[in-house]
Image (cartoon, rainbow, N blue to C red; front, top):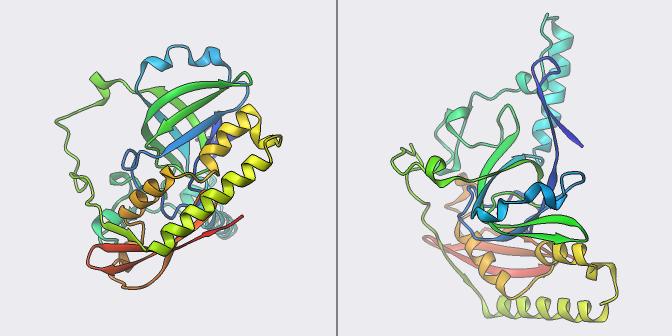
Length: 296
């Protein structure tokens, strides 16, 4: 599978070399920057890029750069196609207008600035950018080989489940870490909110985790217990006790839209692995998890 950037005469075609397998399947709840939440996830490499020979030496690096595609911008893509069609029908040009050019947004409203202030798209990490590409540095936990195929176990990703991976490069501290660099409007780490949960919610978590374990014990001969599939299933679907802390940390980042952050007692839902987690603001800088339900 390939990923096309731009018009055929002004484009670069890059192969999709793998896919990100993660607990978060929707954009809502995903960290807005890498390494804010040490959430464990997996990069499943695709043939022919999944050969162990291609990763010899990578285990010597603690972190890696990931180039990836914003693949959930469905409305943006549909809008791009519509505007492109209208543009091409209304006038003829020597240079054909591409979908990205037809809908280019020169300015965006970063959540970090409250969603009210506009800045240039190239001064942001907005997903709505001409290339549709993201770039993240993540921690490489280990390189694992299952059934002859490579899986990269990583932590701290700001990518959701199913994200196409375009490239992988080692992070080199002496050139990549610029301690004296200025970070503009994002000079400091965002302040976390306080997150609590009711006793009822804690009991719901315990029951879902227990029921999931009972199901796995009864189906030990199923495909989910084959080597490669089982590894991915663990990080993509299987809810375990440690996930409760991850869920708390993700919600503490406050994934709500900036313009709705003053709304009290208004429920929001974050999908994590096989559960929907409901939470709401109950006081100044205080969020509470009010319900968790199994989606399977």
